[in-house]
Image (cartoon, rainbow, N blue to C red; front, side):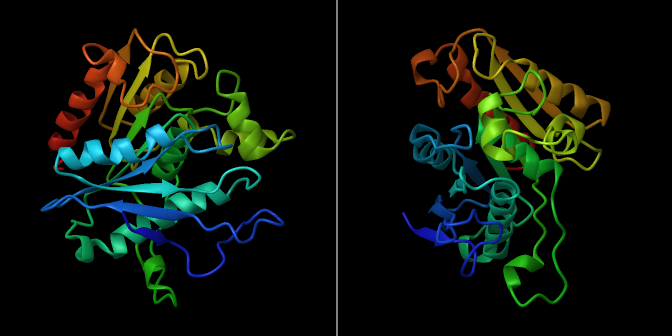
Length: 262
């Protein structure tokens, strides 16, 4: 699969001493696909979980959807580097839509755990395209058409995931920064539709994260689905060991995507 460098040269907001780190997209095109999903693996903003990357892209391909796995910057890089990478990835796919045969109005992002936080962050905090930019990728909007949140970290407050917060915001994050990156507080009526799933048994990232996001989306009248399954530890990805129960999230997600026009 091809590895795509999404920034021309050195990316912005790099951690000192790590300027050479270059986020990438790995493309998994599906023949005849008109829609695309950008996949963001989890890992607490400290690593990227392999089982939440390529296997997920291949599952999407089986459903006739093109996929791109995002290798975004993680610790020691801090905010706003990951969000900048996510926005840039969306702009990159949109600007190359014709090349991949994709409708630029059918681009979603799917994220697990901290990757779900990044997905929600991109979904609630997009940037419009720049006018007449030197870099043509930046002329595209980073607004998602849909987002898929899999046992996501949503808040940076009490019931969030402390490790993700520390890696992304630092140990002494201000209250303003914590509010800014608590995605349930950033939802508005323009937030894209969402598919959310979580498990009751998740002890690492409490179910309250997904419940808070659903409540916020409901208050802003944003269409979404929320599925809560009983079985499954945190980080189960495609949930293949729970195929008859929690693993049903995959079928439900594809059905939801079809309703969105995918």
